[in-house]
Length: 191
Image 1 (spheres, rainbow, N blue to C red):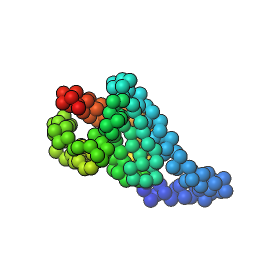
Image 2 (cartoon, rainbow, N blue to C red):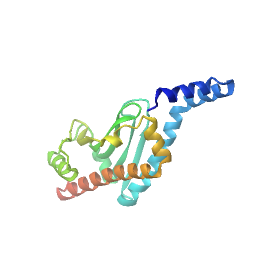
Image 3 (cartoon, rainbow, N blue to C red):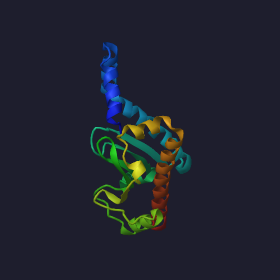
Image 4 (cartoon, one colour):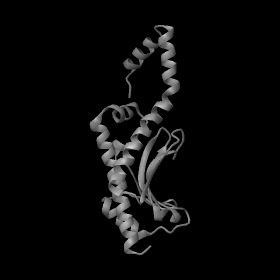
């Protein structure tokens, strides 16, 4: 985040003249749109990455209501999963967006499928996974990929190619691994 000295420089620049003050207000009023633009560009790039592995029978989608909990997310569902209400999803647990987690979700009416949870625990080498009425299996993202609200993460996502590549790979790998594991499970169990 920003240090007090950096904030003071920004304030001093904004108060230097009318044009700079108006520019500062414009940036402040546009911050949500700036975040939305960065995230949408990232999601579209991630969509290409995921679809290059999972192919046509999978649909990638995302949500961008970044002003509330659970409003930002992205993931996939398989065409024949839609009627069953199954999806692989990454979601912000807090506004900002912040506190991201990922997993295999379901409609409330579905069973928990405990053997799928165990299989995903083994595949993901996870001892910290959880489940609830909406998730057969989920876990919080690794620390570096969990919180997106701060300017450092968004700036890296926008301007640092190596950081962006790492974030793309991390989420692509989570989504693809869970999707392939769940698909194999449903095929083997004829579900």
